Image (cartoon, rainbow, N blue to C red; front, side, top):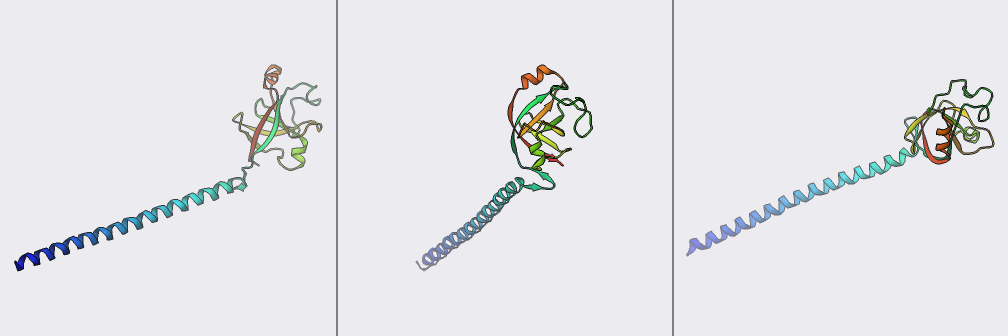
Length: 165
């Protein structure tokens, strides 16, 4: 009978030891879980911080988005000056690449001649090489050869960013 009591105590010790080891392992797993959550939280905060940085100038690229009216123009004297195929900076116009900007955008320093801009709605890149008559404000004007294409384009509200200065 004495041996049975010793066996029960050893069995209880084994049960308690295995239970203690399980708790110890569980604590380690919980610690690993908390470390993982901490790393994920740090990544989330870093991402939020990086997104906030993208709204300002980062690596020389202005990520600010501007909303303007956009139309199209043709190489005819009624819509341009006496040299319809030469831009304000002296380059030749290129269809769906040359863009004219209103003088208020130039004066405010939002865009400059030679800037490359991306228009989100059109998913195209344009080069700022010309300006619009001073009676128009907050506007872009895309060069198009065809008068019918320009008419179809009409007036649109678009969003653009400067991608290269």
